[in-house]
Image (cartoon, rainbow, N blue to C red; front, side):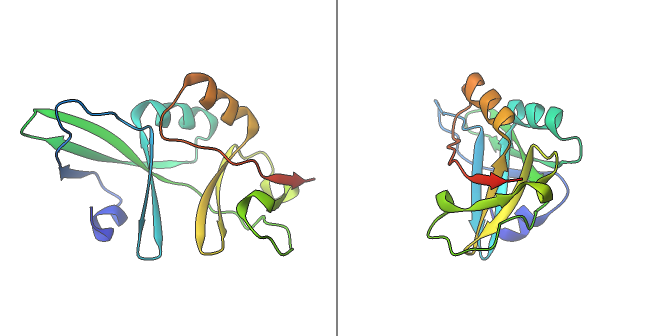
Length: 145
């Protein structure tokens, strides 16, 4: 997909080859020229919508005409918060977040060293791990109130 296709806020149909047997990840992160795009499977999108009604999702349909298959992913538009506490950090695992700026958000984005990360609340993370979604890895971060 091109950056222009990913920036659209309407549904997109992308022709692709899913293969005869494909494994569908529940989360896909795509980086294109200083932009990061986050795609979620249908079942993960449903869970995230329960935790945060303000998230915006736009469908991207992957269509494999040769194998007569299609899959829907949802591009998520999620607010970015400026909540990283002042300090010199060597990596994302050392970052400290300011709890008062987060308030009661279960999911948000942060920018750190020219990269973008999704931050999930512990309750949401435990729910995702319990349900066995594929393609997601978590890194613990610290926060203070």
